[in-house]
Length: 277
Image (cartoon, rainbow, N blue to C red):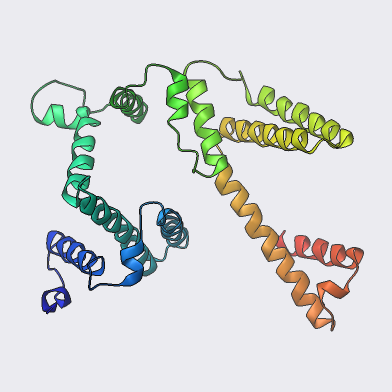
């Protein structure tokens, strides 16, 4: 009955159509109970997780895994399109055409020149291109103020990434520190305010001051051209490596971290740090 779904597409178009039809079957009355129950809302976490797994494959330079994870991301796109199609909102073709139209609209320095509509310099810089990209985005979203542009940054983004984007929007209109040194002084100020909040013991205030401190640190990272998300991930990786050493050494000594004192674990932690130098 579904023989055609077993045949692999020989072109990208055929492969995409095969996946589209497969999802439609899974969502049908005789399909999979789990797939039929899914909604845009229920799939939110899946979309986030699949995207992160694809990035993980990129960071590990694992092309076979990347191929698989990009497929999982594509599966989410097709599933959302199928759900929307069933409701009469849009279909997969509309999704693909919309993003293709957007790419043409946001690259006038390429497509207008190819069509002979203007004579933009072919040596246009990346900075100029990015500025035009942002201008076109603002026009598309009917954003007339920087605040609207900030509000358009998805709240579901990782907090470090979102805060950096907010700061860049503000910096774009001149609301920024003059130097990294000034941004760094704000970190010290926020750290002191956090200490004071802790002394007062007001939990809501402590939460606010921790947020202020993190925001200030992101500002410093932005000035130093360091990706704060990547920096924190590297530190987490480093922590895991050093803690693994503690567990390995503890096992060699016939014990576990749970049975060791903090001083004993600190000794092994310092040894791990020494080995990394």
